[in-house]
Amino acid sequence: MTYQNIILEHAEPGIYVLTVNRPQALNALNAATLEELAAALARVGGDRAARVVLLTGAGEKAFVAGADIAAMKPMNAQQAFAFSQAGQQAARAIEELPVPVIALVNGYALGGGCELALACDWMIASERAVFGQPEVNLGIPPGFGGTQRLARRVGRALAMELVITGRQIKAEEALRIGLVNQVVAVDALMAGGLAQARLIASKAPLAVQACKQAVRCGLDMDLANACALETSLFALTFGSADRLEGMTAFLEKRPAQFKGE
Ligand code: CAA
Figure 1 (cartoon, helix red, strand yellow):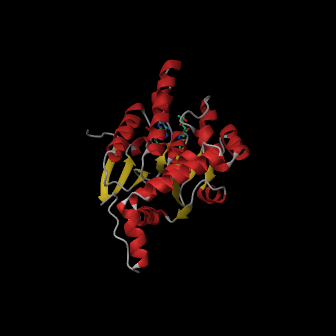
Figure 2 (tube, protein in one colour):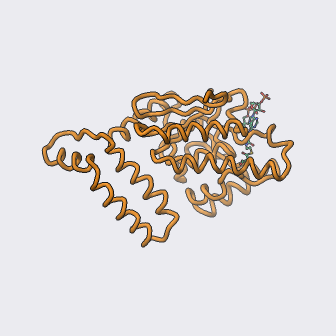
């Protein structure tokens, strides 16, 4: 598939960089872009050598400035329903990808852009990043999962305030409230993301996938069932060659050579 609105690069072995590429519209998400994102994520999901994805936006100004307002304006309720479902599906595809997805937020992450970043496993922001759910200014609530993922990330009252007032926050506040894990200088964002990606790629791939699945699925369960899931994933890794290699390498005082098996 050739993409018109995104760029999928295999930056280094196991490391993909996925860029929303509509800088003329501040990378706003229209239906075609959502479809391409889903296709690109499926492609990465089908690559057994994939280890991590960095998701970012093209240009100087924006990660993603939201759903495409020009595309939404003529929609009726049924079309809006389908559009919301497509956005929800793209967000779910990020969450369900077995490998970690890190959002590199290089500018505005508003509305659907904030929602896309929230679906990622964590975010690194540049000092220029701005977050918000300004949908109330357009007469709509968030539609790509923002009311749910923001509340789960920063807590009910803060999420309620942000979606109801549309207040936008800068990187520093995003760090303070736990929306982002790290804030770096604008020029250091991709390098910082790649450094973290290389670190992830150096770990045992099946263990990394088990960690993602346990945290992601466990948070939607009660504690007893979530811990039972963790036990199953823990035990499953004992059948992997990498588990034996990791423990043997430790005891032999040498670096482990993981193969993802
Ligand atoms: N949809 C469509 N086009 C957009 C867009 C969006 N969400 N955001 C920006 N653009 C376009 C602008 O229309 C403009 O296009 P033209 O050059 O053709 O006029 C171009 O991108 C540059 O934008 P601005 O001139 O507005 O740039 P700025 O620096 O003055 O302002 C901004 C930047 C504050 C991000 C401003 O563009 C803005 O407020 N954008 C809209 C943000 C927003 O409301 N997002 C939520 C959308 S609704 C949603 O996402 C629903 C959902 O949950 C699913």
